[in-house]
Amino acid sequence: MIYYHSHLHHFTGHPDSSSGFWGALWGAFFAFLFGLLTYVITKRRERFIQHKNALVKLERVLNKHLDDMALIEAIIVDGQKTLSQSKVMSNRLFDLQLPDNFDMEIGSIDLINKFFIYRSNVEHLNFNSRSTNHALTRLEDLFINGQPVPRENFNFIKGTLETFEKEIPAFNKDITNFLILTRIHFSKIKDKNSFVYGVINDHWEPEISKEEIKKEGEKFQKEVEQVQKQSKEGNF
Image (cartoon, rainbow, N blue to C red; front, side, top):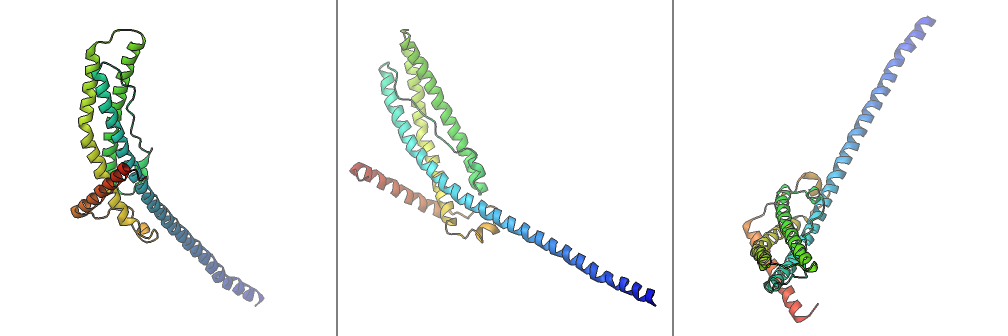
């Protein structure tokens, strides 16, 4: 009998031990799921905030590019006059700057694709600027060394600048169109909740109509005209 009771006690002790084991296992499993869910939510929220900040940064970059292109155009026009007199222009063209790895910060596939195209155009323009500057430096070296410089050299660089000048309006239009699109993207998400809208979506591709693009373009043009008016009146 003693052996029987002892054996029964040993036998009935198993269910309690097994239940505790499975309870701990399920507890760890749900804790893992909760941790994973928290991680995903946090990362998506951070990605949304990064995308929103990237749009602000992109708008600033494009605005600066418009200002830079106005300065480059002025340098080109002045340079052509100087070269017409068989003189080397003192001013040099300069590169348009783009942030490194900026495409990794954008959360819209549509904007990323457009940024790739825009970056390619910027690189082409920068290459032309550097090539022109190199030719001007070589021309300047000839002057410094007291060597005669054939007029054809001045005419060649002048012709290059003329071609460059003709490309500026189209490039400015590309900058403006990209800027308008960026502004619309930002206006559609600036008031969105990062915990709701940001977490639910992996990418942020708002629907944009032609009418919205037209209205934003008109709004941007009025802003430009206002800035130009203030600049002429000296109200800054």
